[in-house]
Image 1 (cartoon, one colour):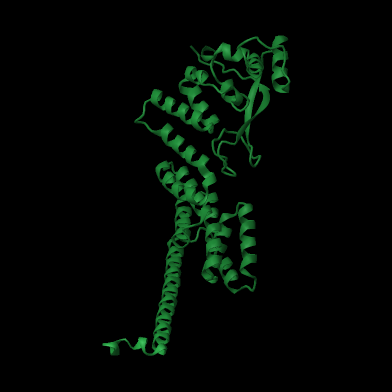
Image 2 (cartoon, rainbow, N blue to C red; image 1 turned 90 degrees about the horizontal axis):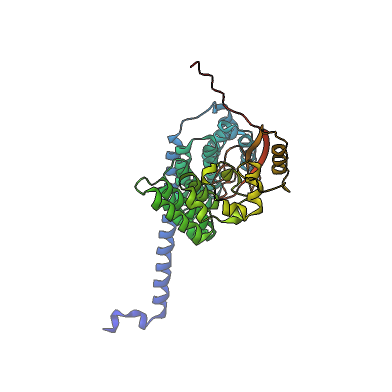
Length: 347
């Protein structure tokens, strides 16, 4: 029976078998690599074929294909067009480069830039498909997951955004605030939950994590102002200035206001109370002085800035529209003339 086990008698047989197995594995690995590369190429061609040109890009495409400039130089030119707001030309360059350069790493980078251009231009569905194409071949790409979340958020599909968020958390554990933000947006938009239950869950969320203070108290002061005062975090007073400025006098908590120097100055400037002689803040001090002189034709308007990128917005935000940071809004006070609505009715 030993005749069937030649390797026990001839060591060369084992070496031959080893090299045969090594050759088979190498061939299978090579074949699988070629098959995967061909599949990626077919997927890319199919992806590019989905989109018609959004501009007059035929001449530009020919220049990219025929010009001797490097692909990196064309990428810089495309990003320059993008910064100028000329998204049509930047998209055409990215499309041409994807058809010209077959390097997988370059294609991944170009697809990411293409998806961002689509996103900035407002083509959310095209942007979504682009980032899904990236994730199909490179699933561990945090930037693609991040922009996919932003797209679903813009489409108000918060459940899908939260699903993508679970994958992003595995790659970037420091994105917990974004998960809380999405959960908060889902809670606020859930029509099946009553206002009182919703208010209680928002309070629990804030007291557990001490994040999203502006978002939580904006909702509470709008729908449940008395409950907002009950759980009010005085450390947020400056950040909530614009929200507090809009609170009606009938919904004020005078005990909390009297115990906080900033709130005394803010609501004295608003003429809701008379608890401050002046303020170290120029805008509030000016309003208080004007009111004491009998001048009541001035008020505050607010602009908003992001603590992360310092971008300015005329509307409040919970996610910065420029750098997409969460809970980074900060109000800027501006003195302005108070405008009263006149009744022009003929009756």
